Image (cartoon, rainbow, N blue to C red):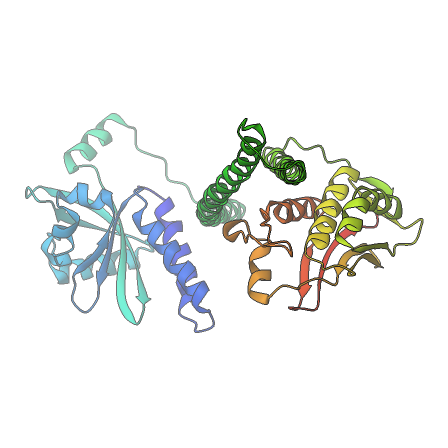
Length: 430
């Protein structure tokens, strides 16, 4: 006799009490329905869901179909009385007798597709699902009567005990413990199912991400190979000035490809947990000054002014390499999307527990529709800068990974034609 089914019945009753109290939202109701479907389909016992009005079997698990010897379609076309050997009145009488004895189950007889009679133990509870009344049955096969007789011959009569109040308390405690464990198992099962669904979504997102990345990678190589082929062609009769221009384009394409590969490898190391994360107290002013120095020439070539508005001695608790990578990507993007005579500045706002760093530009701006896609791995947006060059979008994905590694947030505020603010937070202390 499987006692777990008693706890399962209690759990189902508890969940459907929430389901039918009218206070649950649609999402919660959907979760309860999914939870019940998983319980019903679990093959730890024979399980049937009976429509009260039609007496028809509307749902069952594989164990039930195997036990009765019917396919799912065949079993769901039958009424419960077609498999019950006892008549309706006899079932009710047996149920009433069990209640008088204080039992939460009753014994019955059922027949399978071959006409074989089986002794069974039945636990049940009424349920209302989407305004339809059902009886949920959990059934266990009992040993044959002759087998029971043989068992009685071989075993000594079991002693009869009377429980003292202490014994009863201990038994109640143990049953409560078992019931709580059963609830915990169901909760864990729900969480595992949700985690599995999230994992599927994440894998689908990464598959899409890598398909876009492979496309970007091929395009970058085609650009480098195409330009180098022009320069290597012995029949190329371009002027020296034209060849120099091609060489400069090749150099720029090579730099972009290198930056892209560097970001891709960094992102891959983060996913594998191979990127060392060593946050310590750092001077934010010094970090920003160093990154600005790297882009000083690029900014001058584009006619963009770079400003560091952070005070010396501004301390944050961060991994210095990750923070430099975040700033390199944001500052480089800001320069690429800002017209000549524009400004890119780095501002800071110091809070009680975290510091907000903002890269502000006076560039072309971004629409709300594009903003919603920029930091998402499953809908990577490929932007075109003021020179008509396309970016890969990978840098911002990497920034998001590194900011979240610091338990921080990253967000974008922008308006078409009025520039953009890319902000992220870093902790002030460990």
